[in-house]
Image (cartoon, rainbow, N blue to C red; front, side, top):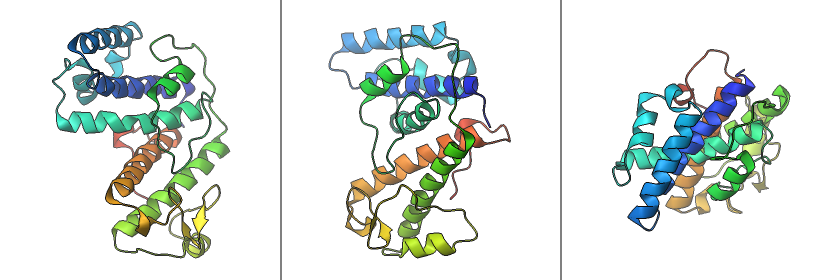
Length: 226
């Protein structure tokens, strides 16, 4: 299991990369350049740039207007991993399994992003982390089954009888016996909702797996197979 200090370090890296994407969306070149400089200096002050991967540093250091589409997509979804890490460090409530993180301002307030990084942090109990991991794994497994063509499924039955993968229905909502997402079964979601749900789950599963891993894998290399 990762240490509190490593989880906090990774949290602020993910938030920095997410905010670097947000900078691209500001209205004026003056605002974009000002916030890019502010972010760049804050990251350097706390030594985060020295522990970033090369591809992460490339996102951070790219001047406003120079992020490519792949970098934008990668950075935009990192907020979901950051949400899990912030929850694990007791900085925010548990994120709902079908509740996307849309408010960067709120998570920045909760974590004091761009202000200060506390010297001490506290992780939630391992059992609580594992419970969350099982919940996200169950959702991700169901989403992937849907992608394989299983449009309707008795998920409660599968959870009860699955032996190859450790699944759990705790803290999930159901319609009939299938997973409820945004108040609908998966077959009732449109393409954008399905994609958002899947991307969110992937980043959150990566986040919780990385915290619980014992093999020293880098965050972005953490196994997200469900």
